Length: 267
Image (cartoon, rainbow, N blue to C red; front, side, top):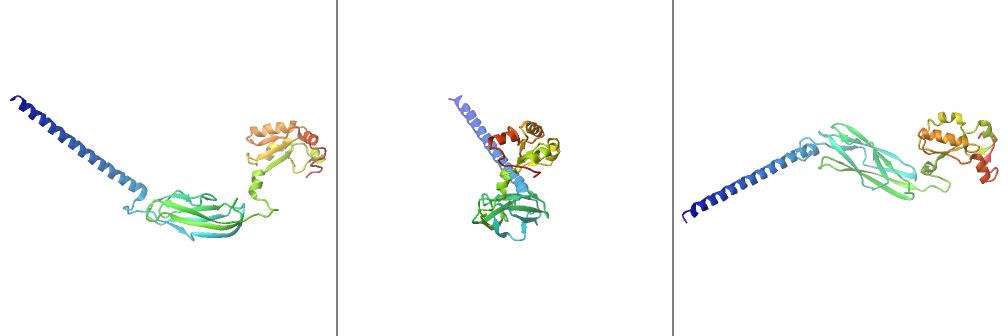
C-alpha cells in the first residue's frame, strides 16, 4: 500500500502535465488560426478593396445609362459606345455581365482601370432572329467597390423584319463563295458559267493574295485538270476552302445540257 501511493502521485502528475501541454497546444493552434485569419483579411483587403480601405475605386458612366436606338432592321448590328471613368483613388478591376443572356455583346473594355483613367465599352446590339420585336438589352458592370457596384446600363430598339425582296447580310456572308474560271481570256470569252470571273492560272496566286484564306473558292477549267492543279497550289498556301469542279466545264455541259447557264463575252 505504501508503494502504491507514490505511484498514484506520479501518475496524477503525468496526467496533469499532459493536460497542461494539450491546453497550451490548443491555445497555440487557436492563436495561429487567428493570426492566419487576420493575415488573409489583410491580403483580401488589398486585393479586393474592402469597406475598411481608405483608397477605393469609383466608376462612373459618362453620359446616359440608357439609349433607345428607335427602329432598326433585322440583320443589322448597331454599335453603341459607353465611357467608363474611374474617379476613385484605387484601381478598379472590372467584370462585365450580360443580363440579357444573349443578343448583345460587350467588347473593348479594359479589365483594370487605374485612378483617373477611362475606358470605352462598345455595345453591339445583335438583331438577327429578333425581327418584329422590341428588345431591351442590359449590361452590368461589377467592380471591387461593393458599396457602389454594380453599375448597369441598357440599350433598346424595335427590330423590323425584312421584306420578301430583301436579304440579310448574314445570309450572304454564310453563303458567300467565289467561282473562278482559270482558263485563258480567249476561252473564257467563248463561253463560261454565269457569275464566274476570269483569273487565268498564271495570275491566280497574285490575285488571291489579298483574299481571306477561309473563303470558299470554286475553281473551274475546261476539263478539271488545270483547276485541280490550281486548287492544290492554293491549298498549299493555306486556302483550305478552295476546291476544283470535277470534270470542269465539259462535265457541267454534259450533266446539265449544253448551254445551260453558259454565256459568251468577257462578263
